Image 1 (cartoon, rainbow, N blue to C red):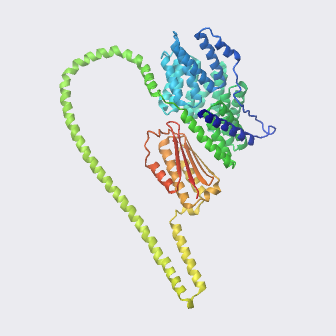
Image 2 (image 1 turned 180 degrees about the vertical axis):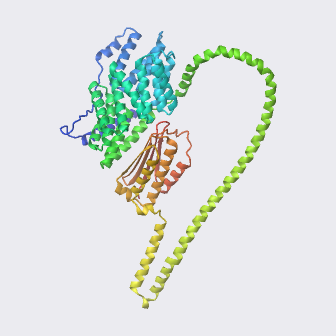
Image 3 (image 1 turned 90 degrees about the horizontal axis):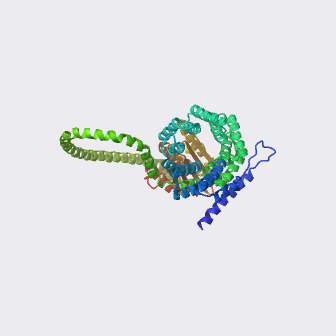
Length: 621
């Protein structure tokens, strides 16, 4: 039953993607660029690759034939096939008794890790790169050791250990046994510079790598570096040049059958069309990428395509499809998170560090023996002095502990006193406001009502016009009093304008990229004022927490009215957190308390190094 359910969800996603592509497909006669959506991956291995495996006379021959099949899928970008045949070959190699078994296992681990990395499964990639290093010789002259080390450095960088990852990459550049691996490491260093907004250094690294790849005939690697150079041009606001470079990668990758690179370039081109506000072309190419990424099982490419499509629909006023894609984006994020597998990673990291230290430990072993003998000669007469000093420290420690307890009691008393003062001040302010309101009710409104009552009781002297004036005056006093209790800016300005000005102000003071989408604005502006105040404070709380703790580069805020409820989706690509280990603080408790008052529902989706998604749904009564 679980398999049928998962299959039906997968088919439903494909149907939705195809529908979006058909709805917004423009005529081929009016477009200069053609996009192709494949129903399945169009790369089919030659039958000879499978026959070579089945006809292998021994395991070594079978290993080479299977690896030829894996290399075919690596070139075409068939990630699931790479991982599938890699895992199968790894399991078979482990069972065999071979002299060069360790080297073969290191080679297979590197391939599996690359497939996991391309799919965005960083924890799984880390596990396999560490295994590859463990099976290698550990020597800088070993190509497999350096290959796995380059991957390890990249994964560590994207998982938050930025300095450690950069050091590993730089070490691989220096110690690479050949020029290909040296330029592979140089290309990854370009990515690190790009991520840190060091665009000049990134451009230089990628340019050097591209020149080598192009001269030596590594076409796919040259196109990959070209795509990054296009992204650098985009960062430098050279949109037209960036679009030309990315289109070239897009077309060349398609013609040569590099289909994962083709999809990545499609996402880049779609993003550039969004920047130019060419939403129709953006929808068309991103829908194409979306369909292919679903069929090929590339979750990271699918996530980026869905996010771009959602922005395109929102900007063209199609809020129904924008909301549908918002829901699909949550589902893709959940699939990425549940695919992560951190089992054995910490253990393998320890093993890797032990492996790196093995030679150093061996070198120091003899030296330590001689040092120990000399140290023992000096140590014996010193022990008696140390013992006396230890007793003195014990006494001092007990005294310090007693003083610390006394100080803690004093601090606790001071905090209690300060808390009482704050409470008293708050109560005093509340009482003052109550007295003011009571006085206003008694003196102004109460007096008016008494006069009206007196005139109504004296029917003979009743003046109709004057009575109406007094009732109208009393009404205006009540209205003014109630308006004074509501923040002034929520009375004078549209709610969407207040939120937009607040977010723009935050953007101008921070380095994070913050996007705000509100749709439809006219419905959001019509919600009641009490709900506006609570939503404004909730957005304030979420942005404050993200800026203080998330270490994010991108923050997306989406506010919409749909199906008689208001929906707030808050997403960042920061460090995230483990929901099972991290205790919720005062900020989250305040958030929950506010949602109780407006009967809202809260869903938090977070995972270490994968960002945080907060989904809030408030019914409109």
